[in-house]
Amino acid sequence: MYRGHLMNCEDNMNAMLEGVTVTGRDGKVTNLEQVYLRGSQIRYFILPDMLRHAPMFKKKGRGAGRGVYGPGGKGRGKGLAARARTAAAASRK
Image (cartoon, rainbow, N blue to C red):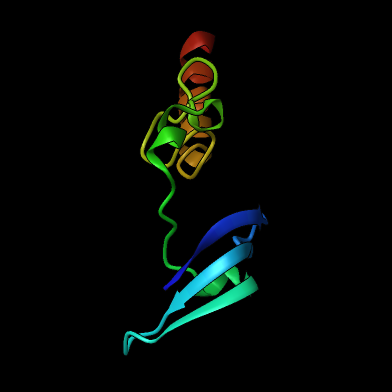
């Protein structure tokens, strides 16, 4: 487990930490000045509770995050096109 100050986090979750305390599985504790962690190796972050109400974590706009797959995610293509074709065919009759 790595515990320290998050200095930078990239879009692929690579993270730079400073003032790090590393606790091994055997309980051995090591202090390091800096650590760079590869994003694919990170399981989760625990952030301070004060960030819960930070503006960067608020949903934006009307209906943001709606649906099972989120805004504009999977499931927006074929069904939508089929409904449009059906509506167009019905309006021609």
